[in-house]
Image (cartoon, rainbow, N blue to C red):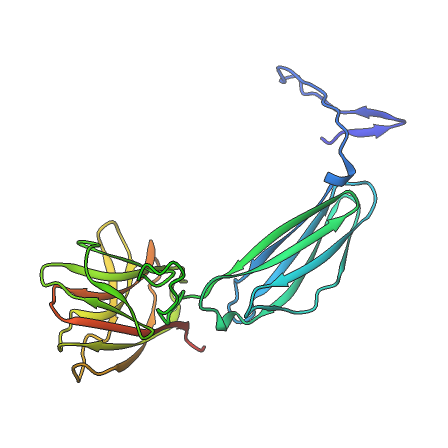
Length: 274
């Protein structure tokens, strides 16, 4: 059982089966007896929030001063500037975070926590379901939209960003794509949409949501594989429901085994309204 303190003495039981026992005594620096941190609360995408937690190992209450800043377009609702933490206990506050629906790239909320003798800075990251769906953000100017990567049977093929859209020059003997890994929920309906332009009416150019269900098995649903025009933008949208289980999900912009040129733009992935 737990140790007992009686008249300044520490008493604890040592079972007969114990091979050895030791008593370790230490002094805890008051400045390190308190801690505070923040976490993103994204379990319910309809009401994302920020959870601030603080712990106190002291034998007296502690006060923690809080200062929160957020990268645009995120905004954090009012948070009390001071959090009271009972002795030997935890305290928690949850505040709403708005602006997540406008994210193109991951954005961070920063918490600066201070208490007598100590301080800590922590970060909580909020990310959109699909990063950089507009395909026009390319910070390092390598021709690959941020958040995406090129791949296939080769990485050496013509591609780039032009007029805010991403293009691939297909190769008849190559399987080419732009890809992004996704963090999706099982048995959940999502709306996938995007715009496509092709230099030829070929189904090999398309937008596809792929779920890896086994070592070599996939569940793949596509939009944009059927076009009505050549060298003209067309918009596509479809509601897709993920399976009960999968290993991972990925979004592909395909140009497979075709000499046609493909343009992609305004790719969007959002939860369907209940």
